[in-house]
Length: 245
Image 1: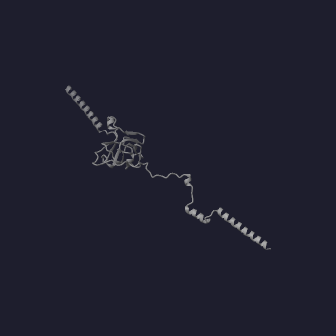
Image 2 (image 1 turned 60 degrees about the vertical axis):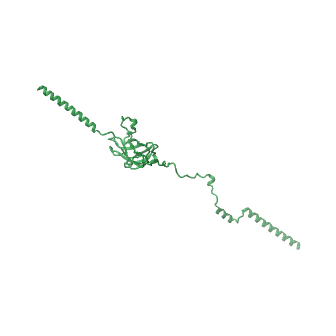
Image 3 (image 1 turned 90 degrees about the vertical axis):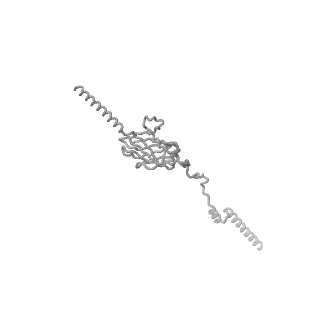
């Protein structure tokens, strides 16, 4: 009887340990996956044009909200090829040297940040990685920048990747985006000589009509000649009068 009771207790203890191990395994399996950033598109195809990309940045903070997402674009997409779609209320889009930034007021603590952009044309590639820096209102930064071939799967900070279907038959790259530096040419600033105001032809003709077409010096000479001639006539008349007497 003693041995039977002892055996029963031993069996009960084993069942309890097994149940505990099973419970722990279930809890580990049910634990939420680590936060990350995802990207998807309904038209994920190489050389597709005007493609909308939707991003979801999951929150992993219980005390702060997401305020900024800084994205480094993959090779083949220029910052000028990307336009903003929509995102959290109050967020703004701005291009950078190697990508873009979307930021604004912090989203509610614990909520994901979702936004979209439109790409002028996707490059001819099999997949595109969008390295992302995710900033919170408390200054913490999540770095989703690792590539699958280099991370080794050890850290779990992989960048969001968009897999592309092969390009459609006949699809070709579009021309490069217009340069932002292109702008209407501006006439050079006039020099001092060029800014001197000269009379118009009409004004010159008016001045010529006002003085009869002769200069002041010419008029002075004419008047002097008339006076000399008058004096000569008076002198001749006086001499004839004297001779007759």
